[in-house]
Length: 439
Image (tube, rainbow, N blue to C red; front, side):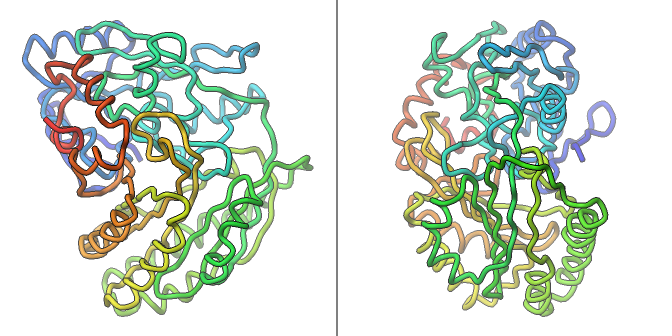
């Protein structure tokens, strides 16, 4: 699953297979001190530095021709504070390990994204999120973090300590330093009841505000070339626990959602004309189901079919018109889209460059199967999203630059000023940051 570099001066590739880089050297520090030393050594050699997690970003946000830092030895729980209900975890810990470790301790995050392969620092630094009426992204649950800055010093920040760094570094894009540990707010583990059911596209749009208001976590998938969606509502439950039976779970989540879907995408890639017919079948393959389980088993699901993705956050009030425009565009374009469009929401938060910063947001994600041409579809979709002042996910494909971001993020200048202060020599620079933050 994770990206690998082959040999000493190997090529690094991301999960989606659309980004590669050849770093001058790779370092796998076993401690914060070793990481700080690697940053200082890079400065002496005049090299830039990037930390990379599992490569789940579709942008070149982690690519470098300088020093590539791999955090896989910086893993595990540092501290559980039951009095303040926080847990401090090393930056390289995969979300999957964090979720399982918390569950063993009778604890859970409040909300999470839909996959858990990423490292905690990679996921939060790019603004990874799930869906929620009242609960925000993974980064919005951060209470404190530890950061190695460009001069090799270790900075701790929270609402009380270095608050201006805390405001920005929770979603820091790797531009302010290398995150080494994160303290999350946690709560006693709870149960969620998930209700998944098909619903016509027009009905979901007509009732969107109601579906959003009545559920703690609402999301849906629309299958292009059809009028069909699959909806998912997750709400807290008093129990009892009623997980998806193992065989049924394997059939629906592995066989249909990964195995058959993979084959359908191979057929669609070879013969694009078959895609609308396949979409009709795919959109009806999953029947309604209800189950109750602990949060990470409800929020997350395996994603084995590789794809590339673009996702934009639009103001929540704009989601219905944007989706109508997207459907009209696909219908008249002659495009053949084999992957569903995913729609989720998030409440406004106070993180400087969060896609939900200062505004209630809805997310629209478009995907294409790995190896199929995606440019025409993504370009047309992006035109719609930007007309609604959309903010692209930092780890997903987009063509926006600093000039655009300075218009859609009211606090953009606050972030770049902080970066000037923390990284004046641009030790953590790469082509992507040059584009999105300006030189």
